[in-house]
Length: 358
Image (cartoon, rainbow, N blue to C red):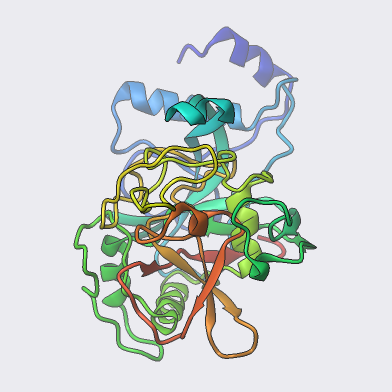
């Protein structure tokens, strides 16, 4: 094969490394089972070539040396073999809030490569998991943030180890598959939602049911799936930002699903009013990811966290929903429900711990 000359020069400067390529829909055994692989069995020749080139380039830094950024996949004896992939994400950022007064926001788009893996649950279904790097979070909102609530403070510093988090909230398609697995403690209704659509988030899910989902998923895959902690959720949502939303100072219903038609609370800051869809939307509808590759972090459905709220047995939810005004959808906004509560705007996304030696 004739590789691009620039890549040839980079390859000469490094030691060779193995990149497995799956040309058929199979499950490798032995050492290859745990190795990050490139899947090309469903792709055209052009798509396959591009995927292989991207995998090679991901191993190289700008100086032609082996990349110091590695993808970590949680270890475990997997019953359903997961595999890794370099994922290209489209990110949309608000570049200048001064345009908001006119009802328009100036947007800047860029494409970047982020770390993640796909947990293959069955031949036609998987969970996209993004690797969240270790770091420090100033958790909560500053006292001068617009429409701040006391329960969002005081701000305090939290240090977090690396972990993985679902790119999207759990969808109805994914929920039905896991609901069909053997129970851990609870029975699960395979069709609990009000707004039925495969790619919409599953809703009307209690905290207890979300925990059951994670337990079944862990047994099926051999990996430690769970709900994110509240600190992990906010850290992953902010992705290094300090603004009310991960894309800037304000929000529009072209960027997220929330009640933008409410008077007088449908607009946030200098942002415009928008629509009230009165339903969930597909988790990938807006095509917007933050720096960590996560989508749909603002609005659509409230997302359950592991944490207890003030020792009253209620559980924390984050992110706001289609039913909420934008103030509730901010990165620092937090609320709580009984662990047995279920509403048509209550869903969740999963997290996965990274173990040493993974």
